Length: 218
Image (cartoon, rainbow, N blue to C red; front, top):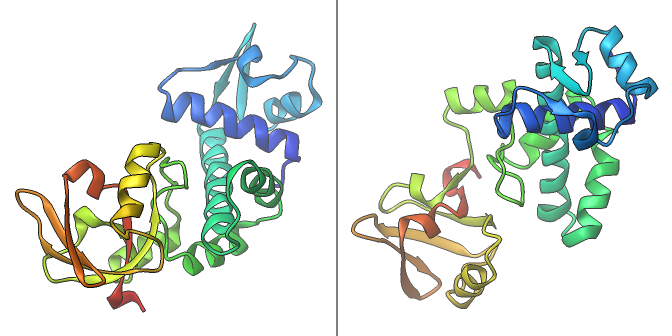
């Protein structure tokens, strides 16, 4: 069943509050919604949510629906950044518009196009779809953090997830930029890799923020 854009926004905010932030519910104020909002009441009629006073609770079917909305939004963010090269507030605004246009078939195709990314540009996890699970079972998953590569494995830098400006500057100074070729030489005591003709070392935390498109997936 389809939902209005307003209803999808409510589901998304509620799913993040309950599933990612660990709250058992969200207040009407935090959802920025009035108790008489037609979209909220429609979600209640469909048994996706439960309203108790000033609190909104996510029911099991609502949890699944919210996860799908969050997945589409974060895939849209990845599409804006990785394919359309849009960044910042403009990318986020476009992603918010685009997520509402995606249906289940389209988001599967976009996820496959992006090589089943694990995180959005802000580092938050993208809930996996059936296409991701199938790709993992068939060993076709393409984008992984540097920490999951084997010694000697090569690939292309897909994207970076760090929001820390100093870390980003360090990675850029090393030549760790999307599109550059990379080869992992060592995993311990630090992650040592080649980019171009130079060899560099980073700690595990920084290595987790470098995502690689494996050469095997091309």
